[in-house]
Image (cartoon, rainbow over all chains, first blue to last red; front, side, top):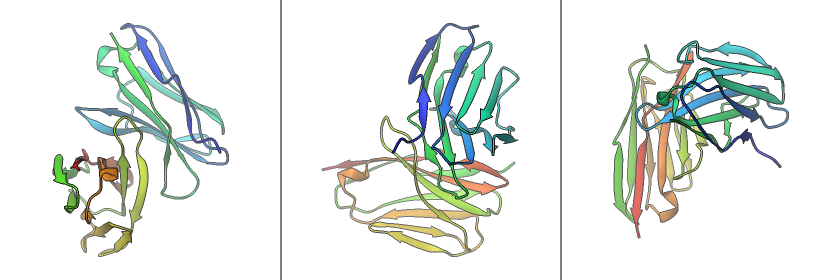
Length: 112
Length: 108
């Protein structure tokens, strides 16, 4: 039984480049969450979707960040242009009408 | 805005000793969740507390939600090496805020 799938697991890119992180939630789950984790700021909720619709994006740091969920089985988080301060582990999580969120393994992003 | 403070930041214990982490919110919460993250891993949901004064137990773990629904604690009895990791609380009141986490290390 596959859990939340994220790709890539690691991404190293240069400042100014576009970065796209991908997430496949658990089949049947109707809520999807994007988080960012750093040593300095801890775990931050960036945005969450319910039934593919963005509900709360107040955690998105700035206009360089955008997230989409074109269908129930796929979501992307895009950073354009990327900056060194965007380096972090980005987690995707999904849930089905319950407080329990299932986290993916994360994408470790390094921007040089 | 809502802030969630968690203490201590680190805790090192001898195997068999007890461990407690505390979470305090600047505002009244509708609910609070607890997660565990192993080193190099991802957060794993442990429990959600909703009711004022609620106490829930999972084997050696005891979770409490304060009467005012502004604070919570997680207590582990007789720690084991498998308890190693970072424990996060996440307070919910229209938006979800995670505490900074308490990193637990256990010496065998």
